[in-house]
Length: 165
Ligand SMILES: [Mg+2]
Image 1 (cartoon, rainbow, N blue to C red):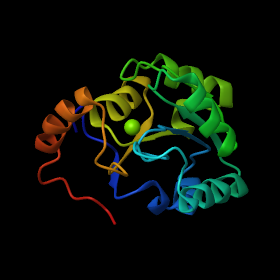
Image 2: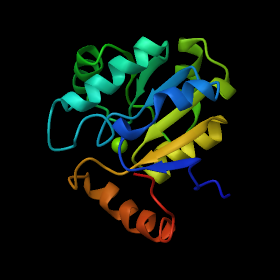
Image 3: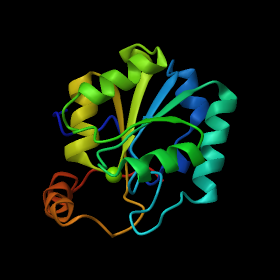
Image 4: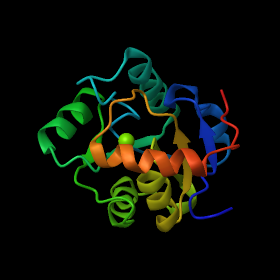
């Protein structure tokens, strides 16, 4: 398992089994925004994502959005719509914002999971912060130009890695 290997690789956030996550002792979910909760080419999260988040809260999970997006207004609006706190301009893969997010939720490393669509920001950052990581497939093919470059390396790194439906 390298620093770039996610603990799990799942097709989308809504397919993460929340009951199993809870049963495994996880209590806090840190979530990337762009292409994880909100498609990069849209401004709102799909209803299915909102429903999954509602279910997470019902179970008792603490949630926070940890986004590299530097448009604070975009991040704060999405976080507000989805009913969670947020940290924007997180500078993942640096682990500091993830660690700060855990602290805000009062969660220990063992209780936290970082979910995101990028290997070189979300997974790497989560690993550096010492938490379980779940990689999901990006919701859309729209990406920032530099993300598109990282996607090339990501595809190479994920070659042969099975993705759970
Ligand atoms: Mg993302």
